[in-house]
Amino acid sequence: MTKHKTVSALSKRFLACTSTRDAVKCLEALPSDVLDEQLQQIILNETLFHEVSKKFPAALSYRRSFLKALITLLESSGLEVIDDIYSIYGELVATVEDGNAQFGYVTYVMDDLSHITLKESKALVLGGTTGLTTWVAAKYLSEWCLANKELLRGKRILELGCGVGFTGLTVCKRCSPASYTFSDCHDVVLDTVRANVNVNGLRGDVQVHIEGLDWEDASRCDSWESITVADVILGSDLMYDVRNVLPLVATLKRLLGRDGVAYVVSTIRNPATYNAFLEQLDKSALQRRHLPPPQREVFIYDRSVEVALLEIRS
Image (cartoon, rainbow, N blue to C red; front, side, top):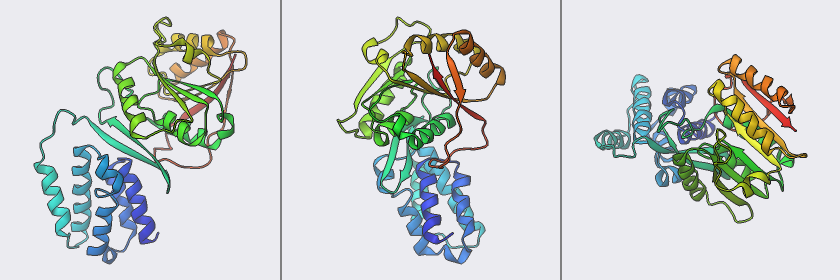
């Protein structure tokens, strides 16, 4: 891998806040003598000093961890570390975390011209919800959407359990839907989605709605008008507990019109929970079939995780 490609790969991993060890590891492909002062400065420019990173920085703890991993790699290779790296690391260590320390910005690069920046939580569970971070299933579904734009173009789309908005922003930016409704039952999630929609500056040609929707109590919905007109329903990682199965299937049954279709991605953490979902779909007379995975890799995530994609129709 050339220096340019290596630094580009490192930059993409840094912006996406992947494991700092894995991010820095890509530099190991370069001969140690290549990591001179000039290249170290380029690395800084493409990570902490990146235009996006300066405006929407990663969590303080992540930036500290990244520089520590970079310094460790350079020093273990017997290389002289430039003063800027030590200086910035010292400043980050001395910085006191404020009340927003749980949050930071994560930027997902789609190509050289397009990216998505999200405010996310470092914690897997925060405020009673898992919806404040982007999970593998959302990245999988987003890649599938990018590979199947024709199924979404001009459609009115509803997303169940939208989380911080990763899939929705991907679809709005690249798949040309007529409208997109982000829905979730947690107010803190919906507030975060609103912030992320503003950060990404969606154009006016896509009508965006952000609505509260509680599957447990179908009457608790901010706006049934934008919920019930959907041509396509999207969802990822909707089942963390078997208790979610009945209300989820009931919601799908209620919202899927005669010509509607849902695409639901599930990470198979507990096969019993997933099988219960399949059985309940069958009992509800909803038609289902498994779809093949997307072929093009766009986002960085653990591809060894078992994931299933269902097409569901009434």
